[in-house]
Amino acid sequence: QVQLVELGGGLVQAGGSLRLSCAASGRTFSSYAMGWFRQAPGKGREFVGTISTSGGSTSYADSVKGRFTISRDNAKNTVSLQMNSLKPEDTAVYYCAAANFFGPKLPLTEYRYWGQGTQVTVSS
Picture 1 (cartoon, rainbow, N blue to C red):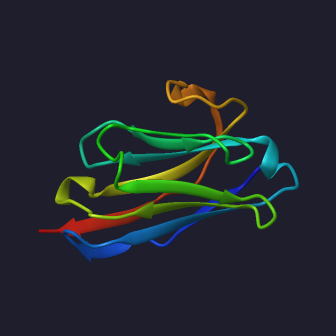
Picture 2: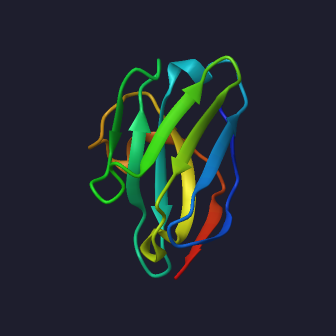
């Protein structure tokens, strides 16, 4: 069992930066690939990016590639999402999730554990 808590959401102006963190409980955090997703009002949950168990591999959605960076610290049971050059269309609730497998095309159903989400609002 893994419990995930996202931190760091808030309001930022377009062009600004924000860093989200996801803290995980449990001693098995390092055995899970981690993903970040987002959901804007009236839209489905969208893949943002994912990181492998070791942190050696990452993959991003085209919409955030070059602007967002995912990292993890297995010693601290945390995964982070650094978001730069934010755009109003990045406004959404952001979720972290844990999966047994790494892959950018992993279905949402393969992510076993989810955080409660944190709101990110980018003003124009």
